[in-house]
Length: 608
Image 1 (spheres, rainbow, N blue to C red):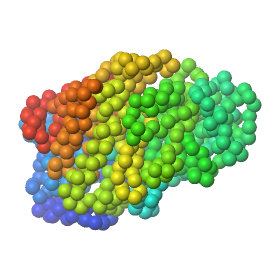
Image 2: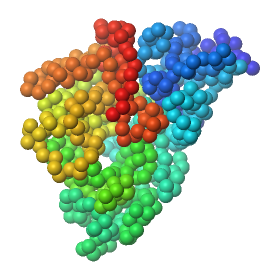
Image 3: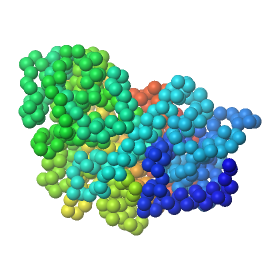
Image 4: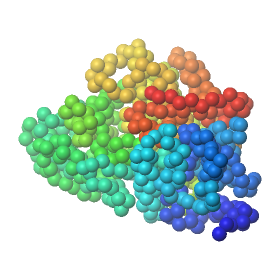
């Protein structure tokens, strides 16, 4: 039965009202919510990567984003897909097609597909991707497209379990410790369609949604491994010994090393390390952080380090094993960052590590452990709470207000703008000077930066940086300051001769991701938010007289900037390389240049 247009419009408007009420998504089933969380990321991503053409249709009160094939149309080709737009969403167009980046949160149900003969609603991202697949045959072969459809389904199924987890959580406050804040990211990556993907690589047993709660409090195995099978970095054995004593792990001979790993990882370890022997397994001693493979030990064990462990599972876009590049490079990068970063930008020091000794890093990476500082006691001594920065942009389950709004009671536009100015001033003052002075580009997205918030005043006093695999260091600049990289294995991704490569990665992580999410979560994308960001960024970089502040500012203010193409990278098997598309620079939104930027914009792809 075809529903009359006027009735469809009323139903869509009613759905919008329900979604934006204080009850959040309570009026839509959890299953539908989970499907759409993945679907809205998928649909935004195919538009942003230029995989489809997008236009605006519907009415002022019932607007839709229409997706069409880029391939030449045939006379009988009347296929399209449309998805609702949130009230108040503004998407710039050029020649009738959407030209600016679409944020997933700008989209809302319903999603409607037309096969040429009729229309039907569909929320399942795998089904929708199969509908889109004939439009993508020039970009990937059929087998890969089918795999992507399955992976999207995995992401959506896992999201439903995460909604269950979120429903059971209380609304957090600054009384809650960092481990609780790591669990606040119930929706995963903000824009990747694989935001909740968790796909095990053989010989690991495939992970089911019902396994996720166990992964949050995982079982640990402690192995005895021949010393000759390992690369040991730093004082690994001495540092981990107090934990081994507390857990009563049996000792081993001098020619062997005790190495912890996730019990789920054991099949992969035994396949590549046949001489490893399990000494003991333990439960309920640690909680997984947002990355799922880094663990915070429970306070009663009084162990001052996190355990970062290999897990042969694809979580979002990458296999979460740890290469010797990372284990060997951690202490070196730690020393560099502590030397060159501002004092209020703390470093989660990577003090020691172990990984496989194989020349083939593809095998060596399956048994790795990094001992990383747990900064909770240091924060407690300052009366600070450590809050993963991405959590500030997250909404608790069935709540339409982000944690930034909740913690700081932000109600009016003026309140939100004032808080945003304070936040980005603190953030940019700490992250941008090392970039301009030393060529150190931190991967400063919201999962790798942890906010240090005063428990008494709520002031963001600083940040702490962690996970150095995404850091980019400009070798020529740092060599001028006496830095020597000879101790690092060759071929690592963190070192580069290309200064613009460093700047681009920071723009993506810091501006597009971290700050973009905060601006969006505050509802300030069209209400002065980007103007505040531009003003603060320009002011901070202008002060860098001795470095390259002006050059960095000019680069950040370019008309277009690279946008990471997650799906194209998957289609082309380039997770270790980058496929990027030039898109209008979101930093310029609402600036006097914005219309000119859109008029002159020419989309191009880059492969690095």
